[in-house]
Length: 220
Length: 150
Image (cartoon, rainbow over the protein chains, first blue to last red):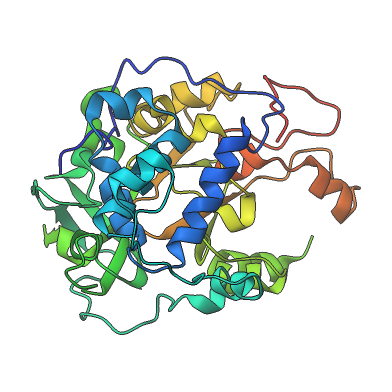
């Protein structure tokens, strides 16, 4: 989706506001939203790709004016309703509807560490589609504009780069976000000359590395 | 300081970071990239705000801002200048856009005049921003450019 989130290369975004002595959270509710995200994730009703996609579909004008944790909050509300964990009415009233099912906690205190540490994750050496590319090979990022989720940024599409490294196998976000299967496949670090992406205004010696799934690429 | 650990960190970051008892959510597949006198690396996530939580903690607001996400890939040198870092033309800037599940950490250059420092003294010089790549590690006592506490 050519969405509001895909901002790489946009201009006129103003200066970067660098805060000194920045706290981890700027308000108590931010920490609660962060915790809510972890606790809800434990239900496994959605996955990280679905979370990103849902967030990308926030109304564009609102996306830009919301803070990071506001986006998380509105994204979670949407996921809660879509996965039928809550109804809009329950969110409005803050009270469970009559007959609303009660769920036992998905995540107990003693399970927190195991759930959020490495052991939980399958790792990048999992089985997947065989790699179509090897390091050193020239590739072109496909010129695709899927209406759903993708992690192929607009600024790279149609451009030629070089496979720098094979990073192992990962679920394909495009299908995983929509609960249409993980389609595990190889991800590569692809090196693009800055001038290939941005033309003459870029320094000839500078480069941009972008991680790309196998199916985002064609041989060049 | 420990050449063998550095080798492990650069070739198998996951294992090397696990050795230190770290790792976990948003840091399962790590890659460490090394700055040199001729190469400056900087990390961004243009599509959201991917960041190695389990190693660096939660990201600062500027890292998640549209300004940083939009500008770091198209004009990294101007972005670095806002952090007080002027990268000269004899140095290559490498921008890493974390579009997948790989999480990047920059291994900063050891600053001059630190040959006599111990491991803990060196560690005290290293900042969060130097591991994102928006600043260098400064020599002890120097103050080049604006310094955010990190």
